[in-house]
Amino acid sequence: MKSKEVTLLVLDNQKHFDEYLVRLGKDSFHEIHLVQNEREIRERLMLLNGDEKVCIVVHAFYQDLGGIKNFQSWGIVKDYPLLSYLYATDGNTDTVKEMMKENELDEEEVYKYHKVRAVIENDELEIASAYEILGEKSIDSIIEEKNYDYVIITALEVEMSKIRDIIEEQGCYDDNESHVVYYGRFKDAPDKKVIYVSQLETGMIDASILATEMIIRFSPKYLIMSGVLGGRPNKTELGDVVISKQIFTVDKGKLKNGKLEKEIENVYTGGAITQKIETAKKHIKRFLEDEFKTGLGQFNIHVGPVACVRQVIDQDGYFESNIVGVDRKAIALEMEGYGIARACEIVNNKKTKPLIIKSVMDNTKDKTDSSKDLAAWTSAQTIRFLIKENLI
Image (cartoon, rainbow, N blue to C red; front, side, top):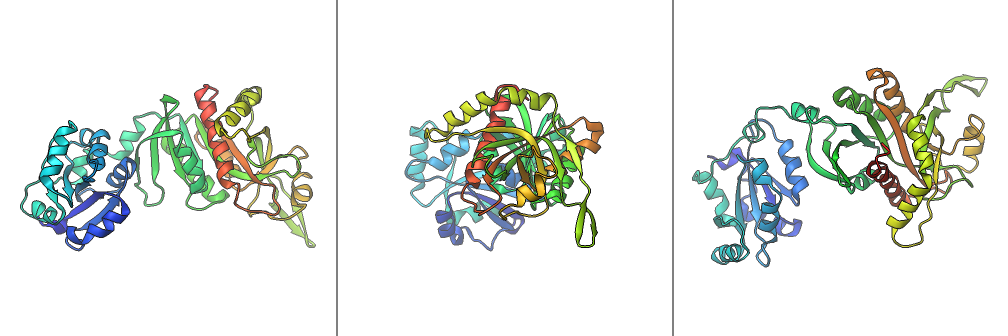
């Protein structure tokens, strides 16, 4: 087989990959991609085209065989039995094989990096296509069979990074060249399966489009939005969690004589779920403070109305002037929730329940991003608690 017909996935670290790319022959293959963990391998496999031939090169890591140990423990070979792979080293191949025997690892041939191309060109490996590796079933049908009750959407990658911490990822797919959709199980409740995906852009429009796609595709019981928002000044603190009872907009209406006559859009997101959450607020608070570990975290849980706006707010007095006048009990504002809740209201006969769980990263004035990481964490951990305790 011509090496130009083959895509290589190289399990390695960035520094070593860059150093040995020339020895592999970086222009001799169809494509070469660095993968550094199990998730990246599975993700890259799902993104292959049907006829694309693929082989994995596993860097042995000469000192402790970390690359081989990880690769054998991840179950990649079991899950993809037609996937070709080989072990490579820049050290002594006989030494590596002896170390494999001593460590009771599955013994395989080991090659020097400059030999990889020759192995492929000489047909020493049977290299399958993505279609053969993934099987005849489409990724769509595989996922739809799994019956997912939960979909989690975030607007930002920092928010998604905290969601990843509470989920054991099982795979991903991308069939519309836009969103990469991941699927897995909650670590604290492995019987509960979840789809999770980030928006391409922040804001209400992207949120409603993505939410609609997820509802039509998977018909989840719950569509959860996790992330960060702006809290009401003097009523919320950084890291506080906000669960919406209703979502409303404040910037739609008729402009007349220089004044906006507001037309309020509103979706009720309360009910049995938020009642259960209100009952459990002190338990959620204790859980967050225990998990924060420093002993300094004191997080409040707010359940109430949330405003949805179409711009980032960094203005003293904005909340009191523009939000409180619409709903005096409003506790926060953000940019996506109405799109999520509205999609749940009009798609799939309201069978999917929206749950907006976001945490305070600022108080809509003197805005910085310094608390974004903390807020994304308390939001994700609240979802973790609700799943773990079977509240949703």
